[in-house]
Length: 429
Image 1 (cartoon, helix red, strand yellow):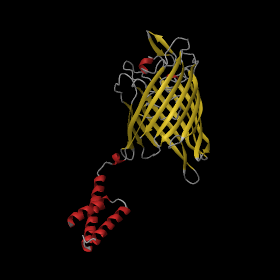
Image 2 (cartoon, one colour):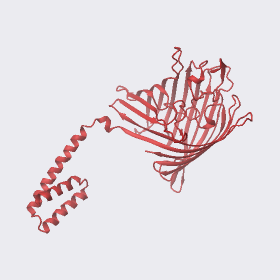
Image 3 (spheres, rainbow, N blue to C red):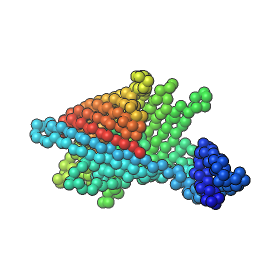
Image 4 (cartoon, one colour):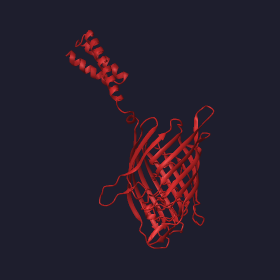
């Protein structure tokens, strides 16, 4: 009987991770003494031996935990899933018939980031989508319940220099390293190459970090041509600041993208899915080729000048804009693009919301057609129009949103007029 009670009490003490629970165990032993099941000496001895055994088990558990590699402990897993209903109304500018579309889509992304050691970080992310379309990770629900593909969305190594902790080198398939709107970079587009980044932290008079200046430079292969050594690639350089002005969030940057050997490349080989979506092409031998080079400079700004309060809820008002111009060839007619807009609120915590609006104009050859958002005007360039959005946080990790885009083709390369409605439910984990 005494041995049985000792085992039970030992297990209770090992499980008793809180002070209040340990106190309950003490009271239990007191009751057993009061009922004559245990003598005071036996109770004292059992408690002492049980506590000693519990400490030994705890030390063993810590030792086993220490055997786990440090990088495993510091690995952070994250992902998200989004369900979307989409309605697309389309009109050809020459008046010819084209059908509207109704479809249901899904996007799933999951991966991890881990610190291999104090200087080296590695990351991986898998996602749905189409390997031929880099601007979207959506999969349409179709083809008699067929299985959907999962692709390598990101895979990178990042090294931080010991002698200069604010300098890092990242290589692989990486998250977009440039501050931008989706006028230039689709949110699902993950470039491939090597990026060198340097930051210059700024502190206030109290020694507190308030922001940083940064320089980003990178080399990005665009297409590996097995039949030629003149492979297209892009060099990108951005300088900017992100942080605060006063107590308000502020970001600003200038950028230059230098695409080399794009002119005269076959468009369908450079980008199998995102070609003939606005850029000027010429036909030779029944194939379409890019007519121009793309050397793009641009400027970006994002500022939160004021924060409103509605029923104790804070509603930051963020204004943003971006301007780009392609100076790659002197005879380009449609070489300019811009966007300006605002966002009111921030749908992050449960029952918070946000409303957004922007207007954009992206001329035919302002940027390469495989770069911009794949939803506005069905992707590509040579279009202008409005985007309205509303999002509500149903929980701290899920949102319900609606977006409506009104786009009009600019007419340079027969782009359609397209109105797009999207209803999204997204969950992050």
